[in-house]
Length: 498
Image (cartoon, rainbow, N blue to C red; front, side, top):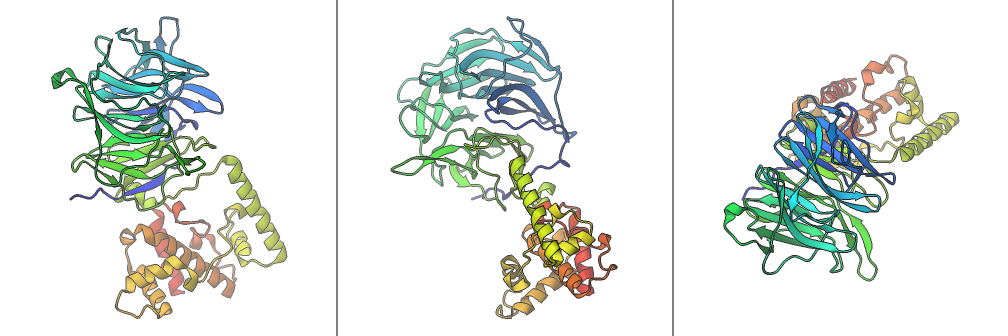
């Protein structure tokens, strides 16, 4: 049986994009238009609802804000600010329904033509859905949209509507037989003529973790609409709402969401693992990732761009996120950067920085830390100083594990110094292209360890020429870029030979 491709999380940085990325938010939508762009709309942040559009141009790797024109019946040029709405793409058009603005649930229906950036409010007819938020919707082929559930401010909903984007007619599906409990904050995704609904929160009590399939959504099916609860093999995700489900090739990728834990007393739990629904074997699987995922969150967006996924925003009960993360195959150039989570609010970051500066000043005044002296001589800002507590080789757990793994049977692993020397010889002779991601952390620390040791032994000005130690200031391997690796190896080899 085919295993899912091992993936890698990498926090996006300024070199990935030009332009201005969208401001932090949750409850927004982000949809892919063909393979050319991603359109972010609306959301909620700082107690206010957003009505802006931010576009990521895939080919030019550029964020921009288009100037949209438009007209609605009331003279509105664009939809009112909102969050927890639905957005679905048909061809180059993004259709938006409902959501919430302030204390009001919305029932309006808009279309944005992304070729000319023009908004139009669509006056539908037929079985018009009631105003709602936290519904979920998906495209059926390239003409229709199906929407299920939501919250209208008084009750959880379990109705199903199909909208024909050509005729603008809404039809409420009459579904016979058993049905899922009413819910909101769920996901709804069309797969092979079935609408798959997972999770959500409803009136039946706790948050749900059930999976349902709806058949008979399209007229071509010639089937009466009906729900079936699916119990699939594998490691099914825990109950949650506010998660994302994104279609990517042979699987659906589920990420994040909000659930509850505890038994006697309930508490909120936010998730950050990836679970996939394999469409070929029809079972749940954990997606193997080679490093730490982003911080847990819900009401974020996850968009598929080729073989990559782009995560943006969300909320974890306290913080609204504005970070962008890539989830990419391990052989993707972005994966080589080995980015790891470092998400703090700006105030937290400045606190950390000022603490580091104060610590560095104290250390240098007392003359206790060669690190501070070295940082100063290298012209490295004190706030960028690496951790002062460098451990020696024997206590560097990752280094020791890597060295014993590399040696295998050829040396007794009890001979720790021989193992370390063998690892250094390996790095001395390896081309940069063959260095594995898991080697970068131990390699960078050993490089910095050698610099400190050489400096303590020989604090001469010549040794401290800055161009010899261009990567000394890095705090960890997450800050290494792909083109830094040859530089790191070259400087490391020089250190070993001196």
